[in-house]
Image 1: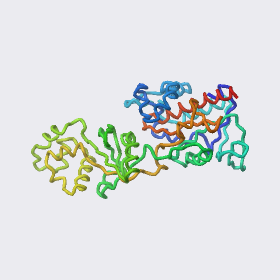
Image 2: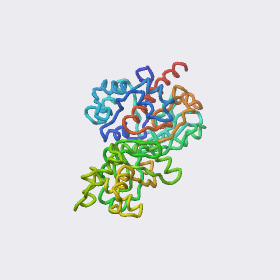
Image 3: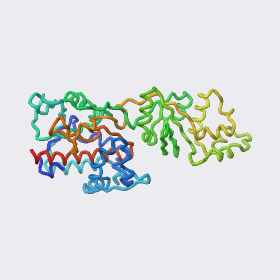
Image 4: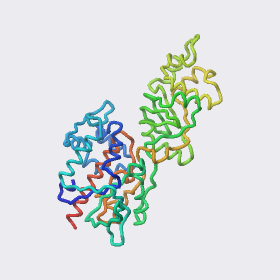
Length: 388
């Protein structure tokens, strides 16, 4: 956008090559965006929605799909409504993108780590050949959050902006795993097992979807959708209770009737599997809850079993480190930005992407907001250069 608008553009990247985190995002198929209507799409950004609305409306999901297809990478809508390139890979799209940038005259300077500004207001970079100072007519900071720091987004920019008086909301893990003190038996048997078609609840918030048992806890799409509520509870009081409904489409009365039948010589696990269609990992979760209650699951009445099937309490005791999170919450507070994403305290300096104070679940919302705010900052730079 900037180069097409007539600006001379150089991209300074601390890494040896471009788009490393973009490639990481593509390991699961590169979920570019989501196909749901904007009226449903925008609320995914929660408290940040009013600040992101204009940018996303100016560069909506259809525009991101058009951009991808303009680079020769056709897209499709999956069964979940998520949008992917037909190749299901990030690398072909990145290569086509870089070719277009090169043809537009965009220059790249790799292994150039931004370290702040010098006394003359010039951008300073640490390079293989020593320190470098650059005069820029405008600067776009797109430095990411603090997840996957080995790919370049290490959050080191926070102190540099704070030193300039810019208010930063503390960076916190988002879309991350939460730790659970599983029993050895459960952990060894069910590590890596999915929970499908479940409903997860914390407080007034319920999400349906899938989750995954890990050796140290639980993660997955439905967990990520509740990430903010779970994280704030864990960080605030040291723990959170997640309630899991294994058969959310069956009410307690129906389950009670099914579980009141004659078990015969069946084991309890086989009976639960056949009568209520509870998966082995779900039965394992019920056993974990029974152990925590101090009663064996075999002592539960049909009514108690029916209740437990759709109300398994799981105690979350911690949040995975920010370095392992898919994304981060927190960042440059929106009050520090004008309507063009320019920092009010640093005229001519713009910020975009994950370094801003917003979060969203996985599902295409992360990349969409990053592209949309980048486009908005680009438009702001062109307007700034024109005025200057």
